[in-house]
Structure formats: structure tokens, C-alpha cells
Length: 313
Image (cartoon, rainbow, N blue to C red):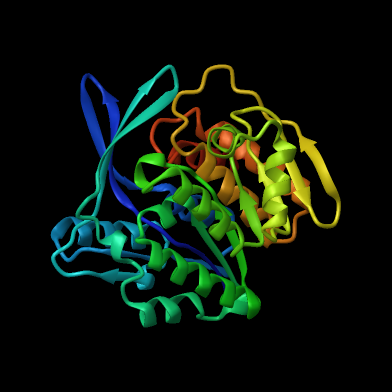
């Protein structure tokens, strides 16, 4: 079977549920991508999640949740005396802000066991799509960022496809210089790079999405898709060059928490099953437009609605 394997941190999510109540779930940027990809990819694909979790009860609940969602839990490494991180979402006019508690997160140690990590990443590389993010790199110490990216490069050399969502969280990085270096390091490990233009303006001072494309092309990417805060997408690939892909407009977003995560799932999954980059991008933007009209990171309602409609038809 072919394998889609995101790498990173899944956390306990507390999302607003009305009347000053919060609903507990499990989410995190690359895990969200795994969740959406499982619903998009055909069943001859295995979708896994590579991370480290604790050995406490909430970590075991997370592992059970991941498995119950159809995601292969074999790539979760238990770390004694650690737990999983927690974040709380506050939403105002559809825009979200986060509060985090992650100092004791086991995911920060996902690269501590180099042999385990190597075995997981290099398992059937010729049939694998590997996916990671700027957050994946940011939670690791610098030497483990390098280790992870070296293994991803090795997997690419053996036939794997690697995708990198830059997904900046400045508070997780030691400095702006380290964050810039991390983006270049991640991009140099990837075939597909998924930056957000507003973040690139802040970090690198880009004037246009073309500037962003040029930088990541220079790092060796074969495909670059520059997201633009709900605006049109700047897409570049080695075969067809650069063009824009029109965005699907949403008048009043409900919750943008997983906009980029779902886009990444839609785009990379589309490419994985043979769609042209512009087709994959259009489908991914349509998915993200539906996701941001639901509360929380995992928008179950859009899939339940599709299933219900199909059953009626």
C-alpha cells in the first residue's frame, strides 16, 4: 500500500462551544492534515502519523483517538515521564488566536531516538509521501531539525515525495535568524513547499508572491503553492511555470483554524493521486473554504454532509 505520513505534534484542543464552554478534542497542524488526507485518499493508501506521545492516560486517549479516526498509530513513540501539549482557541469574527501549554510535550522529543526515526521515515520510501511543517521543526532543538531534514532528503533520494508547509509560529523559535534558517532547511528537504505570503512578508520582507516562489525554487522545490489569506493562489511547478489559481471566496468565515492544514491535505493528496497541480490547488482551496465555515480544526460536518447527500441520491 502507498503511505501518507505527516510528522509533527498532535495536541489536546480546547475549542469554544458556546456559553463560555469549551469542547475537548485532539488536533495540531500536521495531524489535521493527516485527518483530512485520510478522508480524501483512496483506501489503498495508508495514512499514518509520526510523533512522540507520553505514557499517561491522556496520551493513551490520544493514541486511541488517532487509531479510531483511521490513522495508523504505529509511528507514535511513547516517551516516559512526558505528556501531550494543550492549546485553547479563541475566535473573534472568524479569526482565531491560541494559548498554548506545551513545555512537557513528548513531541519535542520525536527525534531523540535517531534509529527509531530513521526506520519510520525510510519504511517503503518509494511508496511514501512525507509531510512536515515549520512547527515540526520549531519544536525540535537545532541538531534534531538537521537530523530530521537529513532523513527526509535520504527518503527523497530513495523515491519518496516530501512536502513542507512553512507554517510559522515565531514564539516557538529562538530568533528570527533561526526561523529563516529553519524555513530554508525545511524547503531544501522537500519537493513541494506550501508557504503563506503574509508570513513570508513578515519573515523575509517579500514584496510579491513571486519573491516567495523564487526563494523556494532556489532551495530546490519542484512545486511551490503560495497561499494568500483567502486571495488567489500563486502556483509554480517545474513543468508549467507560474500562474494564479482563483480562490473560492467566503463572505464570513466561522473559524480559520485549519484553513492551511486542510489546504495542504487537499493539495498534496491531489498530486499524490495524479491530478495536475492546478486541479489539485483548486480542489484544495474549495476544501479549505468549506472547512473555515465550521468550528474547530476537524470539520466533520462537511464530510457528514457529503455522505448524507450521497446516501439520499
